[in-house]
Image (cartoon, rainbow, N blue to C red):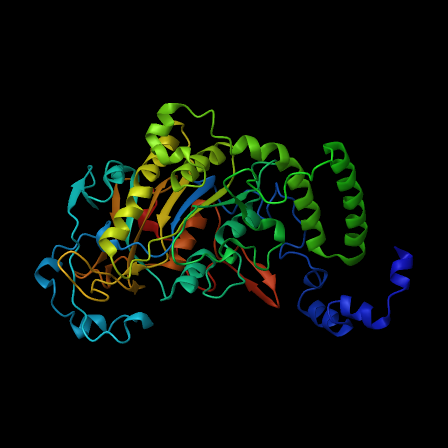
Length: 484
């Protein structure tokens, strides 16, 4: 090692030394610890212990299952019943209403904006009397387990910025995701599985997903989400190459760890510690992951509950069942992504297929968690990145229409630990265009989620480039009205 460094030129040394002595001196003025690559807590953390230890206050939820419906589900076709649209159907939306919200560029050349009622029937269900569309018969049966929030709103108008905003608190890539913040703050409850797992339904839709949505941003890299895939290799590059024995792999990792520890002691770079932890986690996952993703021992009644799609690896239903298994193994943050909710045209047909693919499994997950006693300390979240417009995009016919992106209001729901069950929170106007009661900004949703995990969103920060960052930026308030 000494010989290696003695052979470096002065230019190479300065290049490796974070752009030279000047930047080291400058960063040390801001924070002596940050110049050495330390966390804001001034220490490196193991996967099992976050920087907060046990949180700022007792947590209601130990884990989160986030069912992200990518593409923007139409609130008007699912949960936000608007009978007033019947009398307005086909009529031009008033300028006084449309002018309150920004529209996407996809309707820039549209000369007319006729309002359109949903062609799907709604009924009230449960003791809560929540309105649910006929598209979601299984969800309708569990409304008394749900806290339906109709008044969520965002600032982003296009898919990727909107997805990034709800997942990371910023419309630009590069910030840590919710799961990464939770991992950083609270650590892991399972030494043999990642504390942040991502499942993406196969097939998908027109809008691709950016893996930055589950990235670690500027947090140490062992806090990023680990994507589990369907098929022979759930985690890429996890298994040993052909001919490599497990004992040989262990010996190699021990030598690599020893060299990394020498390098870390010399440089103080926290990413080296992250690499050590990632190598060790990958080694343990070689035996833990196959068991976690093996659904073959699930009884028939479970498949009947989740639907036959649950027998097909990679489907939304199979991923919901896998999420329950991961929750049982104390994985702290489980994120499902299901694409295809982006219906600018042919909305009736498109949203019918989406609901058919997701409705039964979503409801089954809630019931399955409840029957196992897991819903008491698991928070389940359902929702997308924005809503859809009440006017039709493109040509309106008797049986067909589309809806554009709409940030002004959309519906999400939560169930389980810490939230009021059988509740509908917030209201929108008669067009489902603007929030009229109890608005919930995306940052408010994030602050509330962290509160349920025992985290004060204003106090979990990370110092990066001279500024202390947090998930909610400089905004967000806990929505007390939804807390049990």
